[in-house]
Amino acid sequence: MTESVRERLIGSAVELVQRHGVAGTSVADLLERSGVARRSVYLHFPGGKNELITASVEEAGNTIGAMIERLVTTQSPPESLSAFIEFWKHLLTGSDFEAGCPIAAAAYGGQEAPEAREQAHRVFAHWQDLLVPRLTAYGIDEADASAVATTTIAAIEGAVMLCLADRDTAPLDRVHSQLQRLLPPQTG
Amino acid sequence: MTESVRERLIGSAVELVQRHGVAGTSVADLLERSGVARRSVYLHFPGGKNELITASVEEAGNTIGAMIERLVTTQSPPESLSAFIEFWKHLLTGSDFEAGCPIAAAAYGGQEAPEAREQAHRVFAHWQDLLVPRLTAYGIDEADASAVATTTIAAIEGAVMLCLADRDTAPLDRVHSQLQRLLPPQTG
DNA sequence: CGTCACGTATACCGTTCGGTCTACTATGTG
DNA sequence: CACATAGTAGACCGAACGGTATACGTGACG
Image (cartoon, rainbow over all chains, first blue to last red; front, side):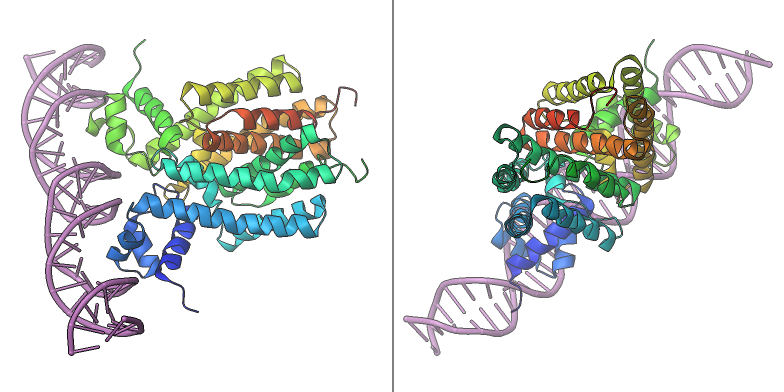
């Protein structure tokens, strides 16, 4: 039942990276939030902070990826899109616009943590791979499906960033309305 | 002719924030790159690092904003879009995928530098204000124009982030192809 | 000439950084 | 019991952090 030390560390890393980025997340912060002894960090992650952050990017990527998979296998692309947008709006409002996408934060902090950036690359590739077959099944030309998938991810990630800057969810709503236009009515 | 101390500091701050983010940019780095005495920083920016970074976000926002204005006043929306995409591709390849958008970096680093985040908000609002009248003049419904403008900015910003993660410009090309679909042929 | 603004150079402040170390405590399990 | 495993607690390291202080140089202007 109780979370393991490793899980607590990864969970804390995800939350802190969402709020402060990679460079802005210190080991001391991680210890305080996780309530874990300093030494335990290097027991589970001999590579130190960067290895922990890389693992947390993988974990967050898998969690969100599982949600994406659940959405696209149970709903149509437009419905999945709405639900995904709603997820991000809740994350933003629930954190008073302090938390963004941890994967994006890792991509931007890639200079100091190259392994975390590579992990971010894998996560984004995975997310797109989940979308492409659903888009083609929905009637989108195979040649265009990967571009639509990339654009959906990019526009939402960019909108989350705009929401952080604006401290408002309106950018996500505006992006939502336009991304719907990229999804043709079925049998299109 | 020679750059003033203030200009050197701001220019250095823009480049460093593009590469390392707000939290990852140290005063020592700024001194080394700008070749300026430590004391001079606090002479020009009594608020220290945060004030300097806020000024650099304003400066970078104005520079890119001026480019956007030049593009949209001399070319059609699709042509402007292509040129803007090309600008980002050059920035990425010219920095070996180490430099991204400094405004986005400020938005993500807003936790530790709130004034810089507010400045990022103003910059993005300005960029969108430059696009909206051109989109309506191009035939896009007034109710949709602001959404198209937001989506264009968001998708490109997100694509730049994906390019950093992938170390490849392909995401920008894919996003480009889909953003074109949001711009109807004239008299549409 | 005096002085004052602007700049450099560098020492220094207290704090925090990531990471290592020693010592101790549970909880099993052979 | 013996002993390994996994954890806590906390001192400690050298380096880097943002910011302040002191001393000096230089050029414009009254």
